[in-house]
Length: 246
Image (cartoon, rainbow, N blue to C red):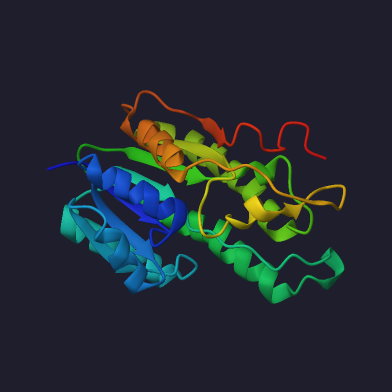
């Protein structure tokens, strides 16, 4: 029948690439995202068995419905890829709107928590027990870009979420790891090729990597037996200014 995964933010970018890779590898995948049309486009890219469930991960009721519908359709859950994320306009800290801050926290951090909580409830109760959670972090947690305080703060918090989830999941055969991605080519990041703000104030183009390499990395992490885990993995364009940034 194939293992079962939920991918959030599956309507575009990294989420779409990972969802399609899982489907092509024989997984059954629940596609979560805010736009039904984008989820339908993702589903059409693979002949695998998918279920599109429009979801705002910042909405507690919507997240609970996502997991309920997944269980009703597929009976269990083997993998959650916490991928949904957003950013805020690049402005100085003193001009950062509270509404923008709250939205980034709601999606990037609270959304990942709500999905993790729902996954624990399902994975602990199912037979065979357990499963895996992979969080999409960011190298921004370790080396932020200028004017990205909300995004960088939530991605640093994601690392804490990963560590706590990994620890608390041990007793229930729930493994948790994190992938930190640098400059994967997606619609959201394509602008780095033309030029992006550096720590010294300069605008410089940066190299990027094909998003399929990210999908392959997640697929590797997802395919491990539950007694093995990739705790943290960094996948990045080799020549991007991360090591030594600033």
